[in-house]
Length: 484
Image (cartoon, rainbow, N blue to C red; front, side, top):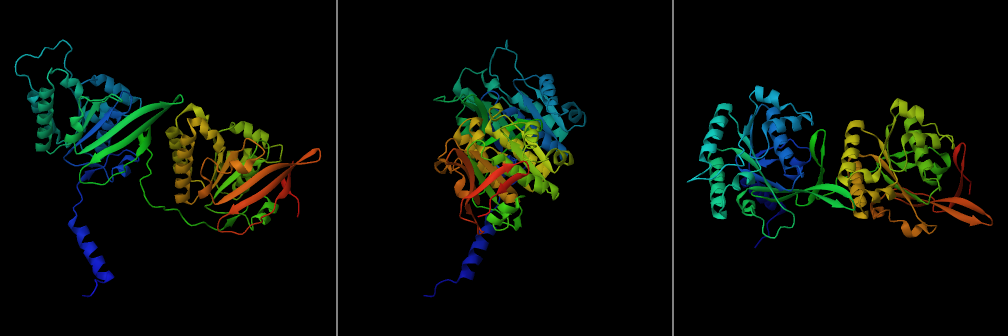
């Protein structure tokens, strides 16, 4: 019997793809979240967002409604816990004018709070509330609805069975109305038997958010637990609540999409260009390793100065000192960085590592890449990134930043401060050295009563280079390599 040809297999696979019907989705409008959700929330179905206090549940729901309003699609926010006036005031802190959207008929804030003194009497149900929501949705032609803190309503019932019955009634009604729904519910971390765990089984899409403290650093995480009929990112993803609202920072691709390395670009120092057989490769990532005072920052700033003079923008992420301090210190080796900063070809962003969590640091870095579109990035120093919370936090930050830069074709320099003279043992660079293209080692060597500086290019992927130690000096004219 003849074996099927490759063309037959391809035709069969194409036929299967046509038979698979992709479920209809509605984008959330939240940066990064739609990538995790493979397009957005399931249309005309229910999505459950669970999390503890301050985890961002309500903001996710409100931001989704505002995304709909931006496209002319009205939405309803049903509030079981907060006052309408408080929601308007809180939203104004993010630059969102809810009152204006309400006036335009694009948003309705429905106060469904139950008085604390209310006493359940007789056969109380939520059917009256559903009638009000239905009339409002019909009048507004709303297709999106957020039910915020539904658990606050269910505390009226003293029977878990009755709670479930009311929630199932609500769920079925929402499906019958063909409303795309987001429901938020409070969860208690590490609770053995969550009171509303059955909601996870009822919803079509379940998202869990939380915030945690590790070594006194607070971080927020998001995880999609399930998504019926759709693929989705299955990891935990850091997110931040910024002035723009929720920003999720995903890595959902399971394939590398890095651009190939480009042509050579000068290091800014003629002798080093000879050692590197012409300079660094564009789009390459370079690790510069050495102990304090070995010349790491000077070497990076020489490159930054040369790139700035060529009219190429450099983003310098400094975790060691302020921009003013760096500019002043680099005057000693004869580097004038101030004029480049004024022209905008050198942009220095200085951050205290422990001032915020890793996801906030990453958010600021990626936002700078989007806004500035630099050709080159310097991170000084990756050893300081451990102070973002842990070595794992530093690894996550650097891996995500490195991956994003390589996809954009940005030339990167990562400076790593060694803690001893035996710096070969510290070459890993927080575990990222295996995916680094070029490794430059700076070391001290004691010769008699003097300490000599030496430079070695340990590897340079895709390029030939010198394999010798080269003695160098830091002078008022920059770095000078001795001829070998």
